[in-house]
Image 1 (cartoon, rainbow, N blue to C red):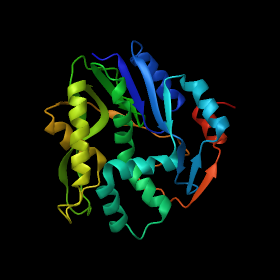
Image 2: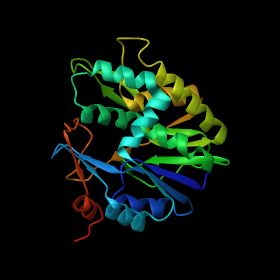
Image 3: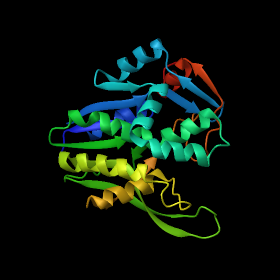
Length: 256
């Protein structure tokens, strides 16, 4: 089993940190996070200022990389230009903030994976910061991913079975490198089968990991978000920036 764990996504709260340090106590933890927190409640993207970044480093330690909000877009253009152009065309009615949020929700993790590859010698386990665990089952194997089967319908008039791959999986380096190549091809051919778009990132991931002959393992992971800053479920209608999010970080880490 890999002793490297990449925690990726929006900055994790105190409960997730405690849980992961307990369940993955023999792992070397890395954290890849963006420098912002979107808030659907106030329609705002809160960007870290220098004090916020210092605070996060004090909480998470030295094995952390923070990706800047605007710089992420340049990575999308570099790796996924066809996908980016397609999203901008299909959702031309959305404002700049909403378009960028749509891209970030799907593409950020791939930017993290591409960047992290130089840290992988043999194998790696990755875990999205969106999740907590129902139990303490940890797989002792290689090349697996956690999945679940859900009932989902875009039109809400019919129920359809879908397999989705949650953001917790293990790669050998060989599989990891192949996953990167498959993801580039997948996203850059995404709009070729128009109009049969499927923007569900977890279903897309399931198909890619299945193509790699990874082992699908069913486990219920618990998706949790900070009580005042939900960004999933309903799309956040973002229309402004705010620099500094001290108040959010204090709540995330229960600091009075």
